[in-house]
Length: 307
Image 1 (cartoon, rainbow, N blue to C red):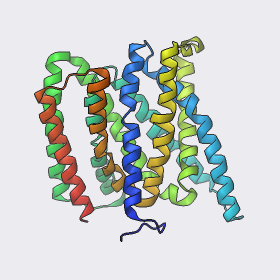
Image 2: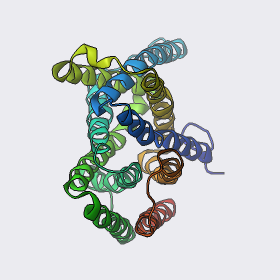
Image 3: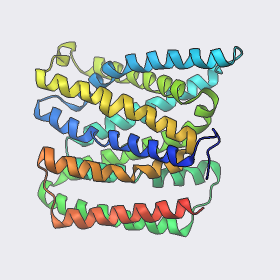
Image 4: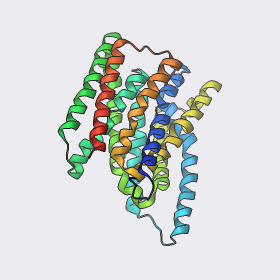
């Protein structure tokens, strides 16, 4: 049986990555429901961090105590803390804000399909920064997936006009930012462990979000309806805390690229929830485009697993 460098079976790392991706896939649904409650993207993101940051701090504290108990000489280099904080702002402040903002313009399904392409950026940036080889099969997979996105984009553009251009551009920016987060997370996770890394990264992102909110909103804007408050709680826990630690654990066990590949399951979860909960349209064009995206991603997955 293939095992990870932590002497745990590799399949467990893949399973954890799939679970993390599935929980993250609920995010778009919750945001859309919050928009129906007249809660804008930044307010939802701020509540997400208000709820989640105490978890990050608490789990990080116990993670540090655990590492210290095992090794009294354990210390995190200041440079690693700074890098983790910056990376957290890129992956969970910038990426989240762009994604949340994009959902004000496009459907939850299209949003998730665009985000699904971030593994391509992980590989591309891996080639740029770490001289990793890009194979022809990866390029072909990318072209297939983006052909599917182009079909959906063209269809939705006729119906929603410039909103689709704005939304798709914002979400594509989120995919790029999250790819950078995943790529550079692995060495830092190796230094401090998944729990500490995630706690520092997400806490720094939370601080950045709250500063952004304070500069653009009134504190009274945090007052939301009873139904919206339940949505904020779901956003902070089910769509944030749980998947964040699952994803970081998966990266620590199997690496950034395989974890990114496990995100293949997320659009299926989102499409199902968007149709059943939000009542979003799922036309023939959406079906064909989604099939292209998923086929491209599965082809990419297969080529990566055979490396």
